[in-house]
Image (cartoon, rainbow, N blue to C red; front, side, top):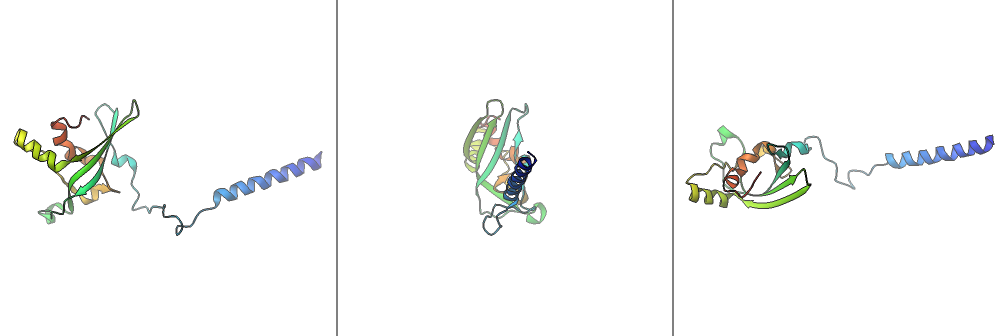
Length: 154
């Protein structure tokens, strides 16, 4: 019996070693470009904003930017004028996801026609755009006119 148990222990040890070796094997970066450097890493929480009740999450992806040069670059820094965005709203209670594309420039014109003013500031600092998404602190700045015209209820 002792011999049987020792052979079973040896086979279990061999299996464990092969499992740990397979877990420790990595694919080189040359084969797979899925690794992100620390500077490029963006925490998902920074890109999401929540509604007042904490029942919805919003994420904004930049689809199109204007080629217009920013005024007073020395004062405000590097900024980008955003023209089109894709808004994704997730309802946390039902896990339902809504997506819509908005032309902010068109909504701004519509707002100026109907209400004679616009509160949208489409100039966003270049540092506040991470991996094509706008940082959550800038969301209200981009959707203020759409929310005023009831295009977005958030």
